[in-house]
Image (tube, rainbow, N blue to C red; front, side, top):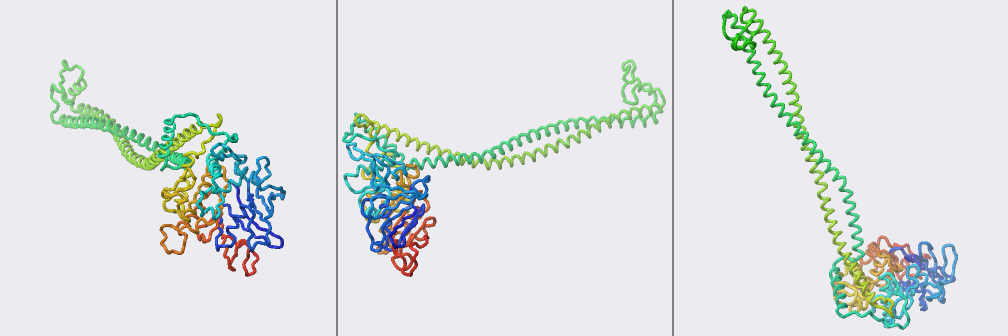
Length: 618
């Protein structure tokens, strides 16, 4: 992009008059007749205007103008110097080397300001169709300046922006806008050749028109292609970022699920083991009770032996079973032997039996203690498992609390992505239809672009104008669109040419700014700067009451400057009567007071004797 860094008027024996411009917004405001509009004339003059520069009363001793520009990053800053009476321009590079440039465009030579600037914006050697016969003209930088320099007459006049107002140049001017928005030159055509269209039935043409109309209708309330692409890129990045944020949460969720599964399994195993042990202990309690019963029986036997003197009996005194040797030859042999002996022997047998039962009881109780300890451990493990399950469940709920909203957000973003993909697919369909429409036209068999702007490009430009007007708080901005035949804006059903001066001015500015913004954002050929003279001074919002002496609507004025200061992608230079106030925070403002207070104007200094021609920018 081209950046105008400064403009300086010089003359013999006088101090130079100079003004520097910001890379973003520069506002020169103040009294009338102080040289504000004259600065636009100087810029136009350096860029090759063939008109004589007007001489202001306070500027009679100045003879030349110098403009410092950055034409390309590789070249650095360069100075373009032109004398007021000259048709050539001196180009001085940073290393002080210089060469002469002609002010007129030339197809055969590149030593002119026009070819240099066209090359910088990517439109050198372009041609555009200039009439309905298919005749073409080369594009000069003077043609392009109609798109970026808005003098007061153009801003307030009824002629469409980008137009000189001459009927004979109207087709060429509209073709240039069409080619820039398409990003390509028209093909060179044979002079005088007539446009011949391939034969298509009326029904086929109507079908194409209906298809495009339907698609454009569906896209009317959708974002422009470049907006949709930008939104899709941001959404895709958001989905990727949220997915990356979701990954550790999913890992935590899986870990919590696995942990709960593991502790549930271990708790179930512990509970099962506790149940088995409890069942065994119950059986062992029965056995222990039997042992206790046997011990009590032995106590009775031992005591009875002393009392009964152990008469012969047919039952065993120790266990109470039959001593019939014939029927029980072995079961109680030992007891029977002892039954034949004295009571001392019986006591001895009782002691041995007691010892045996005690040993069994001790072994049983030892086993039961071990089982009771194991039971306690199993029950403790089961309780710990329950606590661990509660902790894992809580952890799981926390993880789900993180995962669920992110999943919902990703689902919503994905739905928006799908909607944008549908919108972009419709734009692709429009491109295909538009390409087909272009292919059915030719000159003697050679392809010729449609003289009408592509409906897709026109739609994108209309949306950009509406977006700019909305950013400026202009009432009815949503209704704004570009009229295809004249390329002028329409607002609330009325064309720009049908509106009053104030609305014409704001619509002119919106068209110029929106065109530049769209081109810069899409990387289309454009100088990268706009210069506007008096875009606001006559605008009065319908919301301002009659009789109000302030012609500018504060809300629109503030929003106008705020947009150019904060959102505009190129360089904007604005000349106005009214102070932009606090709306400009990044850019530069100058005040031309027209009196002895501060800087009088571009040329004249303050009467106080201060020789500084430029008050510090705000």
